[in-house]
Length: 355
Image (cartoon, rainbow, N blue to C red; front, side, top):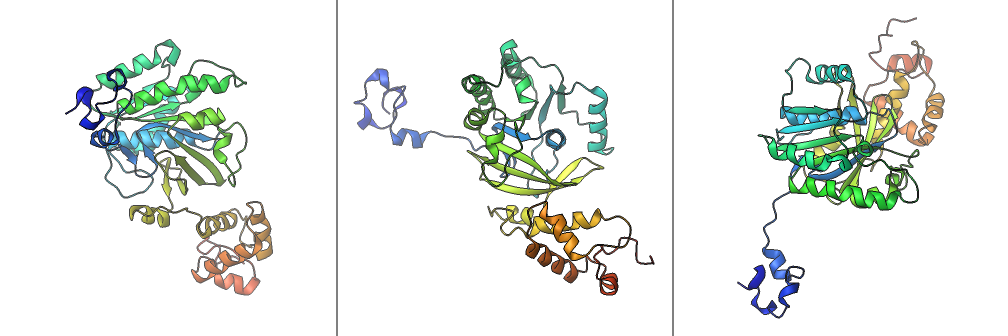
């Protein structure tokens, strides 16, 4: 073996004072690097991750579900995989509401017991107030491995700063130490953030995240949560470790849990990496169902009225007609009512005996 850890003797020409900075390709390939710890395969992994949305879309509820599930050793998002169980920390820096936290725990666990591996903090100090030091002490002191740390909201863990021309340099300074700790202890940090404007899902949606370019550059991965319709969300992902993808989420209000569309879930389990909306039938199918569910009474609506409603979601009339045809074939539509009135309403709506 060569000096200073160099295994290739042909590289001994490198001056001794440079060997700590320069290594050969052979040396690099000899380094044993542990596999990354995945919390949710293809979606959440160790390192510094950001989860962003406009306010009141559900990022707190989604991230709380992540923390509870890992503390309980449960699967997430309705996917089939081998879940990990360990300690989690939820830093609720944006909402010091004990009663709301109790309510979340009760609804989320549904009487299955208190998740004792889930820890909470409502007043964790900022990074310039020994926050990083205390966080490391917590990770080291835990008798069980810590798998997830949620920081809600990330900006309230960082030193106070103004979103101005100097914010880029400040975030470049503030975020790397957090990322370093995440990788050192193999923990998935999930920092919640806001979009500073309504993002354009058709272009670079991540450019709307608080901190923009600095945040995109300094975090490992970014997750974006979008509201499409009532009880329908879209989770978008991109980053160093995860491919750019979209996942349609359905919402269980009783348990405050989300699940990925089962069609995509099956593809994910088979190791397939593809965009959810290629084709977009799954999303458009649920949007039409959502429109029909919002209809008042038992009369129903004309196909043209449904097409007009779908234009709000930028779905062309031809696509809406195709989805309505699919719903008819699957008998999701009340076919006798459609034949008699030419109006669409959902089957099993309780209107079969209506006049």
